[in-house]
Length: 275
Image (cartoon, rainbow, N blue to C red):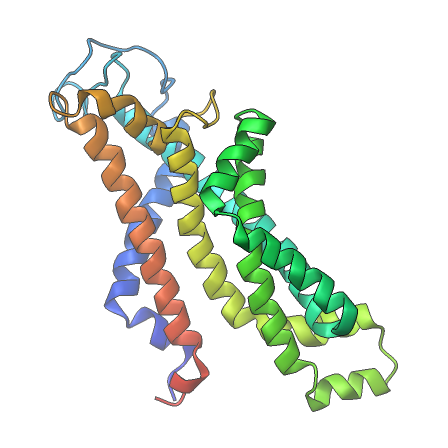
């Protein structure tokens, strides 16, 4: 019987994804050291080609693309992680309460969840950010609001399958409170699908944040990959690197997160534990 880490780390796709994510994480953590200059500062003439005086060249205003890429990694990852944690926490609470209590409470919470799912998520995010005014906080709130419904439905389904088991009934007979049973007995048994869903939500959050920044709805004081793509799209024919470099960074990061998420799903899948 293989252990979780044996199943997880022997998957070559997972290893490739982890290597890239590790690199991006290092760039994000050490951004002030790797690129000490302000990513919005004009440092040279516009449209300097990559691999010359500046590693990735300069953009249409003469800003260092390397500084933008490094600081953009910090912005994209931080916003995506905070938004995902918020969405998972809220969705887990809604799904856990709905699945555990059932009945009228379940009907009300699930109808609310379905209402949010009927609204196109990206359009809803645009409206929310526009109403709240573009900022890092409003982007996090918007992404969290459009991301929690799938989490709630997954947790509800897992809770419904767990709450009838013997150890839960034993806890009820022992006189444990509903909150204690839910937090200590039921929800810990929903972690496997929750971890997989959360990892994939991070990739979605990066795409949503990049898309909002591309449209000019990003945080005005923070450099991000989506903003870099948006500001360089008018010069695509003459300065391809303005779009290609941040675009490839988004592509590889989202792809890596999805590969790691699939690896987690394979490693945590109970049908594969005996293989």
